[in-house]
Length: 313
Image (cartoon, rainbow, N blue to C red; front, side, top):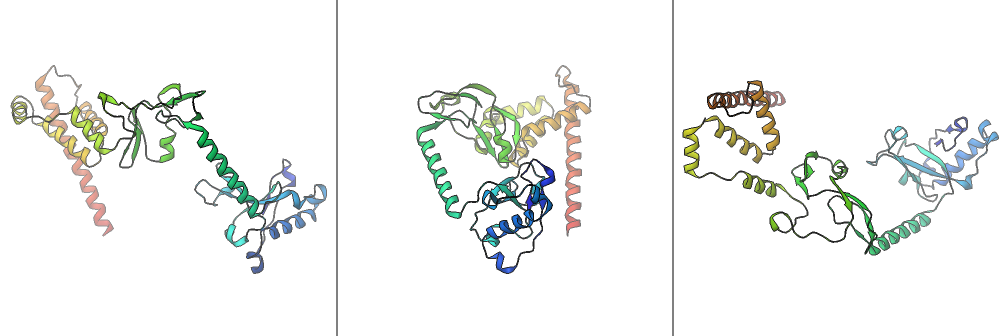
């Protein structure tokens, strides 16, 4: 039991209690009375006695609901305990419990407050509307006034474990909270009028997935005819089609095109390529060397995976 709800640190107190079995199935109010009795009997209590009627018990939990290391976690929150709650049902074994100022409440009191809060939120939802801009969380009265808004220009993308806004593809997140914290790229005023028309006159989607990404990639890289492919093979290096096919295959197994391009460009620079096409012979040589170097690196990676699999067995 900890009493730290006082600006004067000299008046803080910690009391360790091993609960009798009868207390475990009794109300939490017994713990509070025991602490106040012990505190007021001490030198600290003689200077500043506590009033049990002006105190309540609370636990401290992290965001994930854990009580481990809660005292040092700035993101942890206090949860008041009802005075008539059964101790063993609301306090974990060896959990820290805090004595806080403010009258205790019964289970009925807490339930009534929760009902009132639900009704308040219900009324708020009925009398307000949500901004329809992508990424904006504002709510406002129907018909305005319309508050300032920071939002995204295009819908979100949920592809496998990655989450990002299609207007800001460089800012990826893999945790929902991190995704929600990605700041919008546009500013303006909230609105309740939804834009039904998306790019190219199509109906605006509210979110995009893997199929949309592949469709967009297909539009950007249209399939070549057999004649086009044969002409490219006859006039250019064999390495370019290999890298293009590999890029497509990697995308199918979840490796983003941006990541593949970054690796290939890095290998080209390492081999002396500058991305210019002024010297076709040099460009073909760089592409062939890039494909070979990438193949070697992938082979090493595959061997390492095989070795790890053998170790596991």
